[in-house]
Image (cartoon, rainbow, N blue to C red; front, side):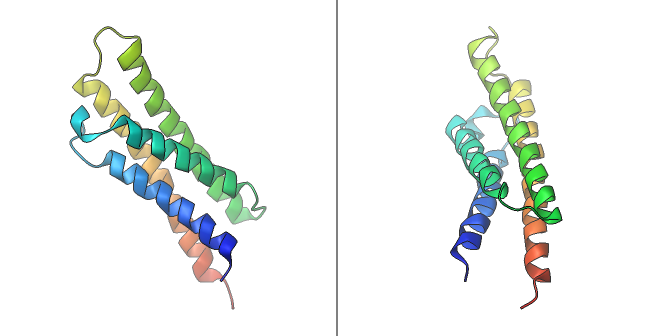
Length: 127
């Protein structure tokens, strides 16, 4: 067993599960989506992105691109949250939370593709 591959797979799957945890719940209810969970999802996705930089294969390029998409979506969700809470006078509304959750859903889809690519790559390895 390669410890480097274990850590790599761990962070990819952890990024997906944190993203799913944030996404799950009533789309328009701020009570179902916590800011710290979004922050944790962003942090773990960034770590997963950094770990993907070492792979120079064609599959590695796809893995890295899915990670960039997830990072971009999560950053956009955090920016929308920050603007709603600190700049806009209306604050957090159901439509703003729906936008944040939708962006996190896009990141979750990118993370699902990343996990599927990892599973496919692992399944095609010859012993």
